[in-house]
Length: 307
Image (cartoon, rainbow, N blue to C red; front, side, top):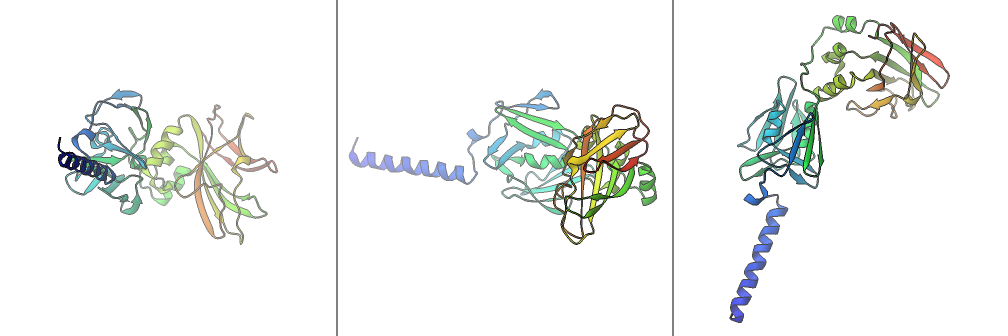
């Protein structure tokens, strides 16, 4: 082969390689990148298949539209740049192909991974599914999906009077001592499915779905803390424990973040925060349940009916 011809082929080969690398860096893809059949999807314990495999990016996972639809989410606008995801009247999210900027129920929102279009097919960020009550985990060639929102009704808008009647004897307000010398004004509400379904509680759809599932195996207490003092302090939740009327003790609560930071975190003066404490499931059918704080063995208050 002539030396000049070999030089031309070498240059062409380099150009092809550079184009391929540029395409990969820009997030574009050839038909070879649009694959299917290599991934096992497991939804609520059952294996299923979809036409396309997920797209793995360094900042997260992108799933084909069909996964969202299988989970009961309506997907509109896949032919354009903006894609709308809806779940009844509870959740409306708008994501945009090529950017992490999105909106959730008309409020600004950021997804971990920008939606991507491959050969006319749209792939959507898996992390937004948490707002729909769905958790996603990838393990090799398996994507495990847990849909907590299956069968969850829409939240009910109750009047203040109806909400107060629903809480009834399931709540109390107390001055709980912080990790400093100050006291925090604290509302404790032991949760039931009816209370979790009340829009007045302010839980997102995704969080409500998870809590309704968790309530089957745990005792949940909604906590709202206000710091009316002049210095910072935090509620020491590790010191809280429950005692039923038969003397059984339930301690070591798990602190659950409902979207505004842990309720056990530092609280600045004139600020408030809410969260949920998860205790082991109450086994007795006691009509009353006391909440204690072990730093001074004080009874903070008593809930009424717990079953």
